[in-house]
Image 1: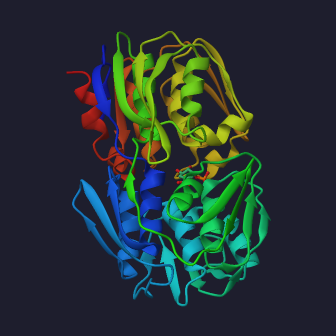
Image 2 (image 1 turned 90 degrees about the vertical axis):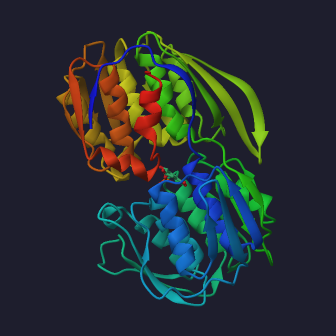
Length: 425
Ligand code: S3P
């Protein structure tokens, strides 16, 4: 994909459904009783991996593109899959599903693509093993493929060393199958969709501060779920509206759960003209429309408790930093190294190629903005968020940018390029 500078992005955009909530709708719908109806389900490759895995375990899932219907079989209704469960590129499918599989009465193997096979699974293997699970890394490298042999589980309290919703959710989902109470405390609160959705379908879960506690229940009830637009997808349009001169973009129906909304705060801290309208509640999640106007940005420091609320947005924040006056420092974000790619190294490689002054650090990066980034050959490393971040950077840079492996946006946002270029028409 080759992209050149554009001016004046104008119009209204509705981003696709939230990836985290879409995954959870499949998992909870499969183990609830009755039919869960999901509107605005994200039809990205990651969420389709979740659908495929639960179909392999005997769950009837109808996907007509607009509405997904999951015919749940109850907590004990999954069937042993005949083949390896393929989680594709999806860390969420791999880790959350492992929590469910740990408590089944069958054994199975899960594996994903080359990126999944290098992502750390020890972080779920340790707490699930403490609950009595049998979960083994087949190559003994703490990565997938994983062999999980379902066991009778018991509740634990787990002090998680990382603020990770995937770790927290794997433990809570295993807790549905455990004797007694299961609780997780994390250093900083991570996204809480699992807790909210479990609560909505009859789970006994409560949260206090950074601790979530779950007691097993006999059954979960099916729900109608309306998935809000994904703030992690909206982030590219927020950034584009701010850095492309003469832009004004209206982004409709964006989830603004406070465990996810750090991007809005950082845009505002950088001097971005971005405002929220029509704040409302949709199926227990706060949702708003956003108005974004071109702004002169300045550098900021992104660190501490805000990091988990914008962890997936740090690549596009680094792009904004390149177009902002002065220095931006991102720290406390070592987790970036274990995402779909090493996002610290990959941002440094690609922003440097565009002539940006960027220094990678052990837990983030320092960007000295205010130069005039120029087009370059960008290696996406097949990381969807890297490809989308540099598509936005390209719109405000001199010359032409080529994104290698640009199709990987399919993972979370199949119509990304069409939606972006529509704003320039
Ligand atoms: C996710 C949690 C985050 C995020 C990922 C989706 C989730 O990962 O990066 O894209 O749906 O729970 P971690 O929990 O590993 O931080």
